[in-house]
Length: 167
Image (cartoon, rainbow, N blue to C red; front, side):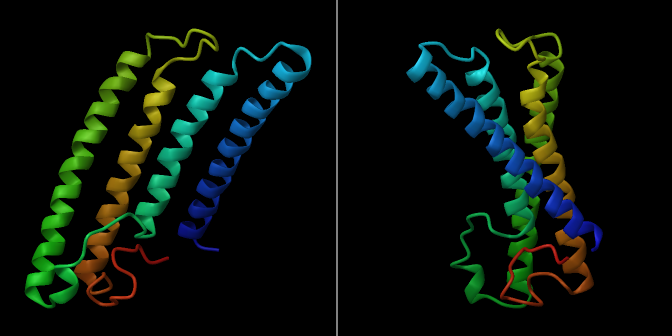
């Protein structure tokens, strides 16, 4: 098993853990409220934190597999230099958006180091770290996609898999 597959399986396992934790926290809280009139105070904060990480991990995985929503009506009808220029322009805009995401997330992590959640008392930086990790991983994947395109293995070489990082 190569490194890319191992990383993908690790991310999928983390996503499954997040989902399982959310289900246990919410469903357990519902059962406690229904049968005993009580509940877990941490249920809402825990499920919110796990949801943030679940979304960030799944968005990163979708980006790496080229499964994000894309608009290719124009580029699908082009080939050669024009398509390559538009692809590189798109990558440049994505890189700019990721720069702002990473920079803003880093600032939120720094602010969140001194702030604590009201119930579970975890540093709020833990929630902001999800978008920081997502932005950083997407930037690495974008670099890998760009490198593959420069080598001739990119989306222009195989139209069936646009933007996908080969594993």
